[in-house]
Image 1 (cartoon, rainbow, N blue to C red):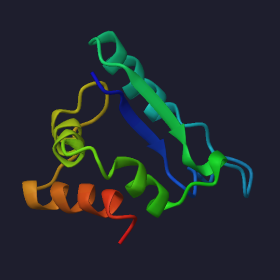
Image 2: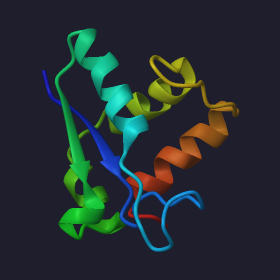
Image 3: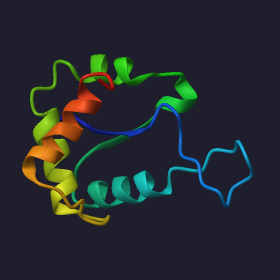
Image 4: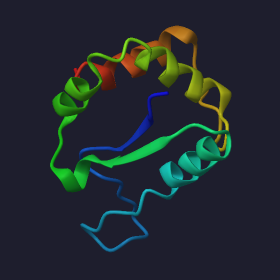
Length: 104
């Protein structure tokens, strides 16, 4: 079974309550990862912001994973361990396509 990869976005997470210019820890991804692992799925948290990966690097890393888009959409729709993402199938597929196409 291949690992589920959860990416900290290339720009990191920022919020007004944190010091200006400080990145927030990826608590949401860590929570999602914990739920997935509890369900028996292997998980890898990829800190793209720390590793200097851009959207193109993320796309390249997933180019051979034919199920990546479908898994991404299912994860968003089901909301296991995180709030469900509201959107039509077309919108969620577009979001998956954006991430897997290198941010285009």
